[in-house]
Length: 432
Image (tube, rainbow, N blue to C red; front, side, top):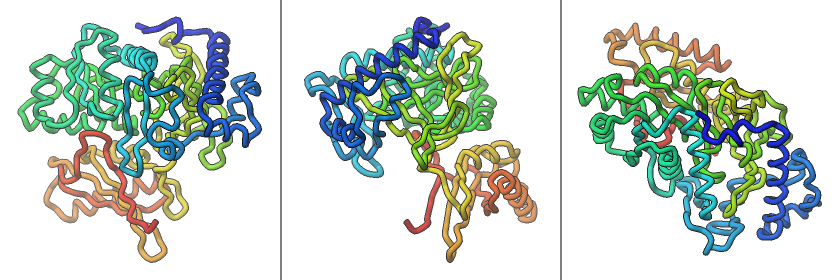
């Protein structure tokens, strides 16, 4: 099923015409209502009348998270506060939170876009969906909640935490769709087994996972553990939360709702645009947001775009699974390393649990990469010699993938911290 075929299967020229009309309207609104943004445009010698094609978006300045923080809390809003009916915000763990406002129309759009995503995943009105995202200022819980209700699914607003109770609800309520971060779903499976429940015996048939980067190897692990179909979806609070893109039954990337978002891929170092198929930083311009329209927002997420129509019938461009964040990329002895590359290697080695931590230290003038990974209880033989040999084998596989020699440390099963939200994978101890 396709939720809005008139938009999701739109003819390419028709969509581009719609995008251009909405882009021109958005640029005109921020020019009139956001003096700070108008000054940035004037510095580049750009005025709204200069936007005559979609390619002209490149004339416009980028927007960054710092711009949102500098205007904390409402300086980037393009409507008066009496038109704002919902506020969300980032955690603010690395500085001031970024605050996002929604008008009634924004909430209507948001619910509809998430309805597209959950329909792409295969969720229908016959499903019982458990949402294990937090229901606070974070957009994940409320975003999926209203989209699932829009398609008619029965929603269990479990929120995050109290994992044993989550398992009880899944069993007693006959939950068929699970919404969480991918890492938390694996922790839930561990707890289910503690409770004497095999995850395969539950009725969960589909999982909608997002809010953190995850690899195809992690997808296989989740599908094997739960016996469900694991789907990916993408969003970020500054743009609209979940609902920017979602994965259909064919796979091969997440469909972007291009009638609402204009997506570009740029070189994160130079800011120059990259062609379809090349990996780079995703940049998004919102085309219909009222309260907080954003021009060329740098997401920091690294991916690639595929404009080819999908076998499912949708014609929207698809984005690849996010490889990582451009600001999360580790540079170790001149080599670029993403945590997802490490995850991909570890997930394909038997005897390892799907939980790991990357630690970077500096000894003298040299950076050292250390990978801590849990050993499954079945793999533990009690032989120190066996463990050392296993560590060397893992290190060799990582070196082949990363082109850098890491140190591997096998740790006891369940000794690494579990997260109910986004998993923390990297500890960088190098002097800043």
